[in-house]
Image (cartoon, rainbow, N blue to C red; front, side, top):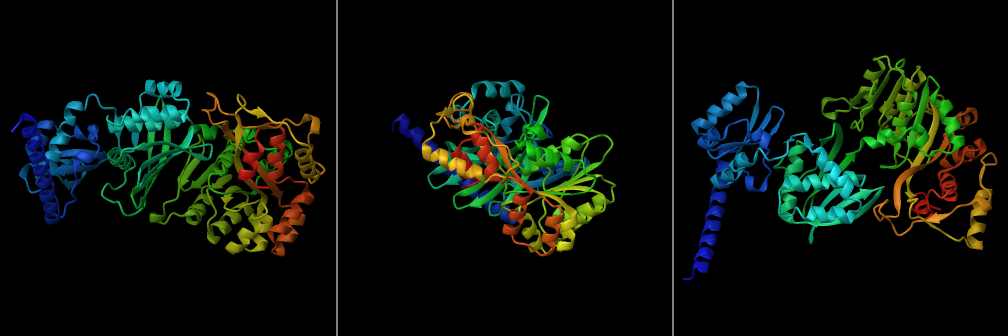
Length: 553
C-alpha cells in the first residue's frame, strides 16, 4: 500500500471515528436531557472562554463558549463529573446563570484551541461587536461599490467567521446600507444589501460559512442557538470610534435554512433635521405653525420603510427645549435622542402601547410620541391625551393622508373624538435622489411637455410652479464612484398633508370616504404626493422613473 493510500485510509477512519463519537454524544444528550452541540460549527466567544482557565477547563472537560451578561453557555462532556459540578456551583455563587450543553471530546478540543487565539481575537461580546476604528476607516476608503464589498467578503471565505461578519457589517456601513439579507436557497446562500430602498445582490455565501455566521449573529443577538423552527427577534450593537450603531435582528425559518435580516439603525437617520426632509415651502410653513401648538395630534402615514420615524424624530428635535418634557413609547426604540425619555413596549410584561401611554400621561409630559397606532384602545388613549393638553405624534399604516380618517373609523374610533383631536394628517414616501455627479439631462418631446403642463394645470392655484423654460429634467446616469455605480444617492421625502379645520371636522362627523376627504384637501390648496414629486422632478432632484415606481401615475 502506498503512503498516499495509507493517509487516505487514516483520514477515512478518523472521520468515521468522529462521526461515531458525535452520534454517541447525541444519544447521551437525550439521556441527560441536555441539548447537544457541535462546537466546530459554532463561534467561540473568547471573552467567555477566559472565565474558566484552560487547565481547569481541560481537567473538567468543559468550556464556556458564550456569555450574555451573567448568562453562560457551557459545553461539557460529562455533566455528572465532579469537576463540572464544582465549576457550576462556583459560577452560581458568583451570580452566574450557567446553561449546560453536551459536547464530544473532539468538539471540546476544537474549543480549547481558542485559548491560544484569545489574545489575537477581536473583542466580541454578546450584545455587541467591536470593530477597530482603523478597520472602519479602511472600509470607508476602499469600499465604494457593491463589487468592492463582494471582493472583500469572498476573500474571507476560508478565514475566520468574525472577520467575515466584520466585513459584511463594515461594508454595509460604508455603503449606507439599511438592511442586510442572508437568504439560504436551493442553489446557495444569497447575500443582499438594501440601499436607498432597493435590494442588490452582493454575493453567494458558502453554506458552512453561513452556518457559522448564523450562530455568531444569534449569539450576538441573544437568540436561542438550538431553535431553528420558529421566528426569533433580537438586537446587538456595533461599537467603533466612540459611536454605537444598533442592529435589529430578525431570523425566520425557511425551506433551505434560516433567513436573517439585519436592520442597521444608523445615527445618520436622526441627523436629518426638519429643514432637510424635502417638504415644499408651503408645507413647511403649515407644519412649523402646527408644531408650535401646545396640544392636538399629528398623524404620519405611509408603508413600512417610508421614513415616518425619521420625520417624527425631526419634529421632536425641532421643538425640543429644556423647558418641555418629551416621552416616547416605541416598539422597538430605534434611536436615542439626548434629553428625550424613551420607553419600549414589552408585550410579555403587559406593557403595550395603550397601557404604556396611560402611564406616560401620569409622568407630566408636554409632548408624546406613540410609535404606531395599531388598535382602538391605543388610538383612543392617544387622542384623549391630545384633547387634554398634550401634543401627540404618531404613525398609522394607510396609503394617503386622506385615508387616515377612514382608517381610524374602521378601528372603531368615534368621529366625535377624531375631529377635535387631530390637527394634521400627513402621508409620505421616500424616493431616491439622482446622483448629481452622473445624472443625465434629457430632451423632452412635445408630448412629454404637454403631459407635464396638463399635470401642472391641476395644481392648487396657490402653489408656485416653474415655467417650462426653467424645467431641469434629468434621468439616472450609468453610475460613478460618488454613487457606487448605482446612479442614485440618498433619498428624499414626498409629502401630502390635510389640515383638520372646521370644514373637515364637520365632514368627519358624517364618516366620510377617502375621496371626500381628498376633495377637502384640494379646497385647502394642499398638493398631493404625486404633485410634490413632480416639482422635485422639475427641479432635477429625482427622475420620472423613480416617482412613478414609488408614487404611481
